[in-house]
Length: 280
Length: 304
Image 1 (cartoon, rainbow over the protein chains, first blue to last red):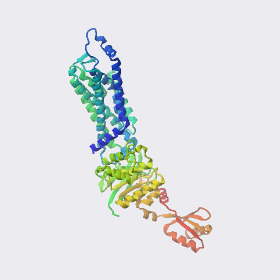
Image 2: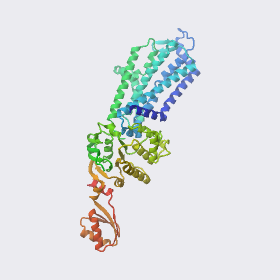
Image 3: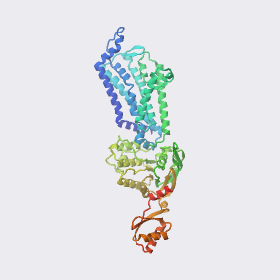
Image 4: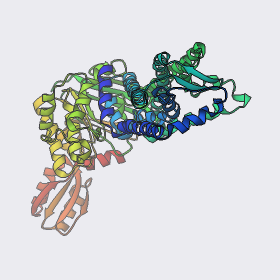
């Protein structure tokens, strides 16, 4: 029954116009960045490398597909959560608002299975969004700008990664970026289990992200103990794969925190939805 | 009619915060019954029905369907139940056949595309299979709701206010559909409705609930027969009729409607005697029309 309802969830997501809104907006944003970089990328790069030009000499194709993909990921990883929650925040509460959750809940499928099937569908949608981002950023980026070594500016300084040493880093960084986005998806579905309308969970998800991000950036000692446990602290962990050497312990810690968030949020949603009286 | 209990609700209670929606509701539905579920707004009908379909968890009481405890055998029981609660809601962005396929997929039985098409045909929606439900009228959605209810061939059908918002033709169609389900397929139907006359026409048994409590339960005909009724009498001499009523039928109350018609509230078994007495006293009785309907009975029960 879980698989059957997951299939149902895919049909619903595919039929909803807002599902394509996220993919369309993402495509438009990436194409805009690619166009801007094609038109004026060199001056953008020289602005970054200017401070190093007295000590370093940059040769070859610096503005390549690898750098473009990095810039795109850096720019969009903050905005994609909105596109994710636009669809996933609606999965339970949208049905409550429409009244269809009442119809579903009178069928011989457990409420736990209803919630799990929505999480699976949300996870697949988030994966498609992440893969699409990866395709546009990396494949289209390389097609338009060619390949080459990647120069990354970190807090410690410049890191130069060889062309043949990059692909696996992108593979894993997209994996961690997906986990971060999955946490957003899980959070919005969890909030969706508490709500009776579509907008509430979407707005609440964004509010939580903004609140946690502010807490994470505030340099106040009172928040120091909770900062490591906020999922927003680990949203940019994908960047760690572009350090040399790769800080595996930090990444492992981030993955653990994100996985724990996902599990806890799923359990809260299942508990809440099972306890809920459906009166809509 | 078989006397197998399909539903047994005992001392059901449900609170929403400090509001007691259902205090103590008990009733039994037998196999093959078309069971009327009556009560004014806020009586607890919908809450009771939602408890029976596991949409709401009761605070107290027991619900058994098909002889099994609902909480312990939820999925097994619900696979034998089809329902419309208040109004059928569908995915507006999907077609009629896709909506049916979605609900059929989680109904516990495999339903083919052909069966979906046949069901749409059965409820009069043939030719609209691929139309999006967003463009359907209320009546069409109601029919689609009936199709969704019947598609997995349930043994028990629960219809909560199924004729709400329908035009007279739609009401008649739904009524005929329910009668067909009983006569052709011997389905057990629970029907909650504000169209009280409809309950009287369709149901063989009923329960009345008010303020969260079941007040009376039984055979519709027996319950109605045991009560007083209102007869409207068309006579040529209204004064003489009033005198006869005052002298010979002291327990009857009456109300003069106009110079020819009088409405009399009287026990049913005394109606022939009233007619005979009026004729013997020289009153011409042009018409004697029973006016007592379920509405009157219902109001009387509620007010008492």
